[in-house]
Length: 412
Ligand code: AMP
Image 1 (cartoon, rainbow, N blue to C red):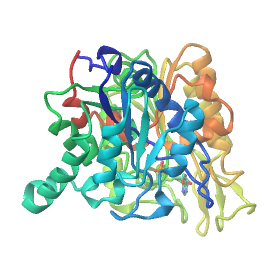
Image 2: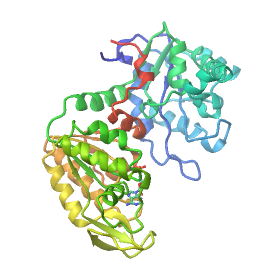
Image 3: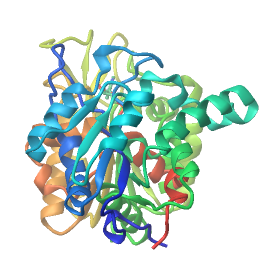
Image 4: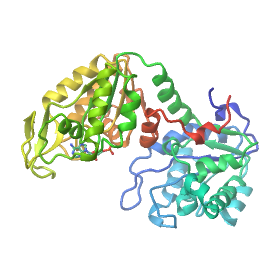
């Protein structure tokens, strides 16, 4: 059943506590380098404010270690929010406590305030498993969540990037607000629609493209996708764990030796399910990875002393062809060390192929910050059906997991 959204409830005169994902990248001077996550929260924010609600926004930013660290302050986000909304968003430099509670109480219809980083409190990230085993931790997490929950009449979750976590603000707060409206925002609604509906009913051929550093991160995804997809295209460092298992020489390319057997097992499972797995047949290799370093192309085996840093031209061409006729595409992870040109060539070729297939009617879903930034760098974002705001969350979705913090919210 579908979840209720902010469009299904009356917020007039109500205080709305909204969990956002304002985990934006900042430069050394704490300037926001991409406001994408703030922009994507605007439709829900505007809906609530225009509907006469008052908004208490909460989020985390980065990984402060459970204590105040100004480097991770959300103050720059409040400033950007004010600019985007065209009105002042009050910033409260604590997320709980007397000051936050008093300011929440004083909010008038149409007012908006942002609380300071939730992760300045270690209680935010106490895992439910740990809380179950330790009464003190449980009490601490509940007390912290109660302070947040007590500020509002309505709970809204629009933080897809943290949907796979059982953080206090994501799970404990809505649990404590049982009996009050608890709904999703438009961003999560869109994520669920694309990831959920598309995967339930994919157009064929359905092609998954997986890359990035570690095969161990993607085992659950591969297991879940075998049997659903027609092809799995593998690039990035994770390819070398499979290739070594296949008997190839991989030089000093990254490899997770502990997962070689698992990799072989997955290849067998895929073959049994008639799911084609495509690995790179050639590679750009270097002696040492550094910007501007000389590289050569290795076909098949990689010489000792060399490391693969990108798929080679034959692989890029093959991948492009294997993507061309796709009707559904999911892509997570770069094909090489794309941060260091020219080792972004394979990733760019894949990005272009995904955009071209989308132009011809494929549904394309990109999860994961690196693949998304490759697409953005190439200016292809408008030619992709959906770029997920949650790298980890979208991966867990592709693994077939459900999110308990969303499950507990109101059904339509
Ligand atoms: P992930 O977070 O698992 O999606 O991995 C992304 C990272 O994988 C990026 O920082 C890439 O630089 C890195 N990566 C991709 N391909 C390779 C490769 N062949 N060798 C080393 N690192 C790679």
